[in-house]
Amino acid sequence: SQQGEEDPQALSIQEGENATMNCSYKTSINNLQWYRQNSGRGLVHLILIRSNEREKHSGRLRVTLDTSKKSSSLLITASRAADTASYFCATGPNTNAGKSTFGDGTTLTVKP
Amino acid sequence: DGGITQSPKYLFRKEGQNVTLSCEQNLNHDAMYWYRQDPGQGLRLIYYSQIVNDFQKGDIAEGYSVSREKKESFPLTVTSAQKNPTAFYLCASSWGSSYNSPLHFGNGTRLTVT
Image 1 (tube, each protein chain N blue to C red):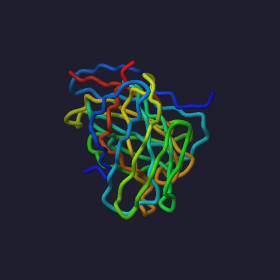
Image 2 (cartoon, one colour):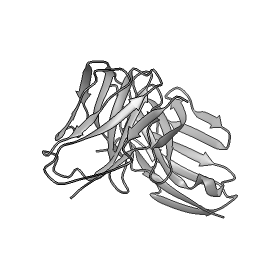
Image 3 (cartoon, rainbow over the protein chains, first blue to last red):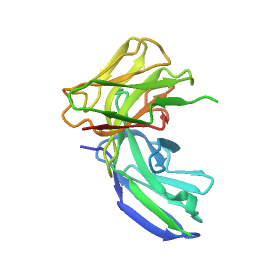
Image 4 (cartoon, rainbow over the protein chains, first blue to last red):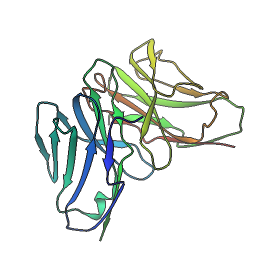
């Protein structure tokens, strides 16, 4: 089974609004990463947050990590139609297993 | 420009035939990965390789094979033993282990087996 689970599965908002998606995981992690996937394309890395960090920003993106609740959130502020995509979290385990585990993603639709 | 190239973009095969998907990177990354993605789902790891001439099975390796003879190349063969091969296949690379460094993805190969 997947380590990370995103919530909600789908989100539809108007351009200019903020979008928040969440990721929950089960076991201890070394880091958590967020990726974006446009339809029919590969994934693009957005942000990596380490287990000892609580918040990280990149442009209009803000990621938080709460290791006590085993959860993370991705906030996209002032959304644009171009933000329409699927967003995935990937968790890096706290072992030298050499691989991350992906959730099933949140599909975001931003209406112009 | 550095990146990962997957070819072809679309691939059609008859059931019972083996098919090889190409993945080439010029990022000088040590680690390479193959993932499978089914509609509306996340990525599942098929195989990964952290150095040349070495690779490990991922979560769903049955019916697949790989080789890593060169640092730049990590081809995936979908064999006739794979029960449900129709899917979107993504190749990725990273400078270190994926649990500690970002993955760089190609644009995928969509395989349809009939």
